[in-house]
Length: 148
Image 1 (cartoon, rainbow, N blue to C red):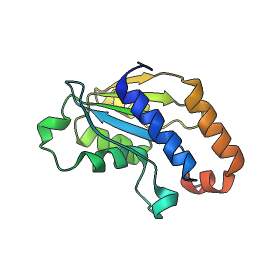
Image 2: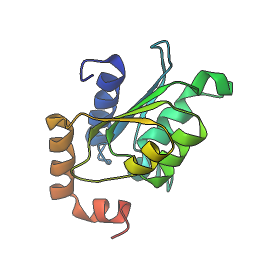
Image 3: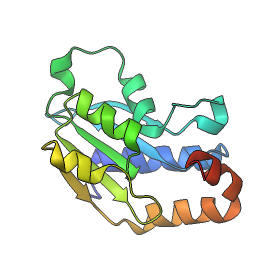
Image 4: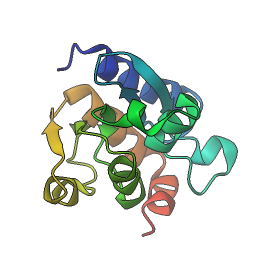
């Protein structure tokens, strides 16, 4: 799955976020037939947004689509999704969530499973290193993001 175009896009987005000085989390929403519907990265720092997490950015960049476009889709994300992004995946009937890593943050994986969603954790080293570097270099931004 680490070679899936959706995961590659999510990782590219995370790197873009890091290069912009933001939180290095990326996501890509891929339809059930393998088409990337939208991709994005966390823009909380860049846009001063309370809600523009990577998954929300990917959904936003998908544009207004009929509900059927989301049903059966896969959300690729470099970090375990927070409660808001978990809820969005459920709301839009995403079938599967593929997570780069969950060591730096554990989100709503259990809730996704309880709601019948497939959850795959890749334990990707590059995703872990991106987050570890960010947390070490910008702890104030990370602590603000996770409300510590």
